[in-house]
Length: 356
Image 1 (cartoon, rainbow, N blue to C red):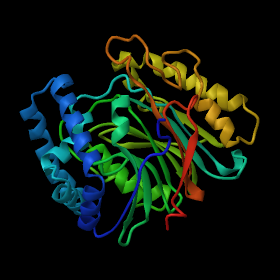
Image 2 (cartoon, rainbow, N blue to C red; image 1 turned 90 degrees about the vertical axis):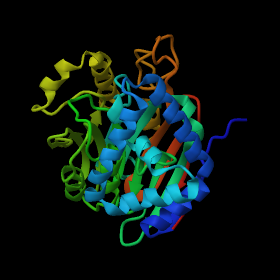
Image 3 (cartoon, rainbow, N blue to C red; image 1 turned 135 degrees about the horizontal axis):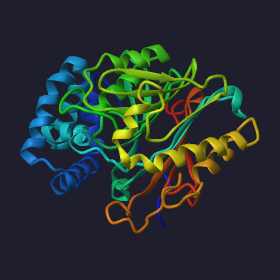
């Protein structure tokens, strides 16, 4: 019988200590993720392995300037896992080498006033290669002097989808836009968000970095739902405009960024998904229950480019699926995760509060 819960790991202390604890506890997952990521780089990236490693090495100085603590944690992971720092950095930058043009994640953030239990909820399906599932864990970090946070993540990444004890929830989407070869990798700026306690802090954590690639970050915050369209030049904040709901797929929505969409014809399937999630949320009875939101994430309209994604016969990425689905009640410290397609698998609950 396939397991429905991901393995839970908790680390605490100094950055290096947390890294050492993680490297020891998740050694097999980190090594496995490193192996499959390197295999994918060798097979699909248009630059050589040597060039990829050079890019990773050049990003180290940008990370050191952005947060020496995050780099210290990676060094701790390397020390106990046996995976060299260069390879760990390659895990963080692989999207800089070749963006996943057909990444199809759909996300939303719901204000407490629009939610039946009066919680701030952010959610998404994570559409990707199901081969990454065995290397996915639930990781709680308790850093000294910073908010405790919980992520669902591939072991070895410095940050991913999750929440912190200040009531900030984070989901992420690919955002095709101009990029540059080197800079602070996306995951480090996401980690900066988990060190924040407000929307203003979160925006500053991203904006202060010399960013390498664009990204989209969907947030639940104490100030309400927000979406960050992040380019290498700026951070554009989208609010709920009084509706209590913010949604996003994979194309730019901010008026200053919309012209960028014309340069990325692969975004043709992002628009229909955005319309679909908006229609489902707009037409659902209010206030929205968690079951209502699970039904949205299980929607199959316009398959194979539906919100709930299943394998299909596409020659390049037909094997992709909704590897997991997540609903985060950020102000309640709860993360509900479906391991596999949400239309078929139950949601398991992980509590940041209980683990404290």
